[in-house]
Length: 382
Image (tube, rainbow, N blue to C red; front, side, top):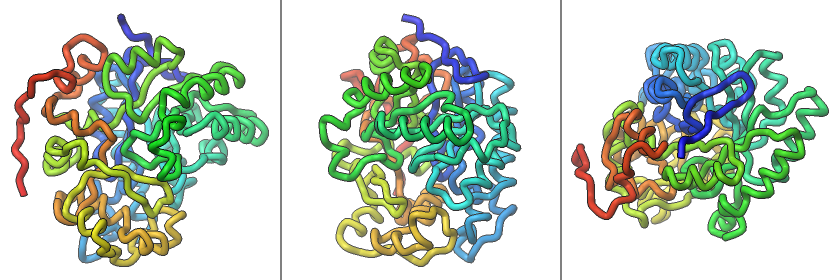
């Protein structure tokens, strides 16, 4: 079966796949631009952009951007978006994922519009004021929700305040790597799994004028994509599979860690953002689980729910610091995020984005689902 095109506001792409935004540094210009160049939607992460161009920001002696302006640096984000669009060659679309929980959310949304982003995807909180920040620009607005109730609240609020509705909505289930819209214990309950949440969100979307529903969080294969599209989804968002691509902006060590992960290595962790986070067991995670508090003070003030480090101190780590350490290639001190199915990448190995999209659209067999084991291209170094 040929997959349908994905249409969101002024955007139309041949492949109904959105590459999920992954920060810090997993999806910046190279990955997002390469995905768009293949006819899908590539997404830049707006989190921690100060790490991408360190010469442009103020940093401390450990290389950490100082303050929210530098951690979510405007000129760095604009350059990343414009570079991604240049790599895309005018194909597909390039969007930006902006966590609603970040400090300077309004400013970052305006930065994304100024840089020419085709769409803004926003979750980790309800982006109730997002339309206000885009000033009528022709940019698609796509909130991430975890329930029909959340979608209803966004639609009611946007319609009343701004006479605007979401151009699409992403329903993200609890198997994703990024911040979950569920309480820790609910992530494992049957009723909160993606397939069980989908019908009610689809129904709510139709009530507001047939808003396109994109599903995410556990979608892995061409078969999964077909299952949801045949039941009314407009497309899917996928992130973890794109880590194992040559074009992914992540450092080599990040890809190695994901490729070596076993199913039992991928665990759910409490986060300073206030939403659970799924990570791979690494030396820092093991220390954290044993009771060691790895918080080293607030430098970046990256997310508002953290209350300038108070929540980070409680959970034992600053998320900006630890994701930044992973981006800098520090295996011992970094946090490495993965969706629940990340362990399947071991069979796949590293692919080019074009080859992965051929697999996800049914044009090639999927090595991650085979009984045989594909040779992992790069050995894990410690």
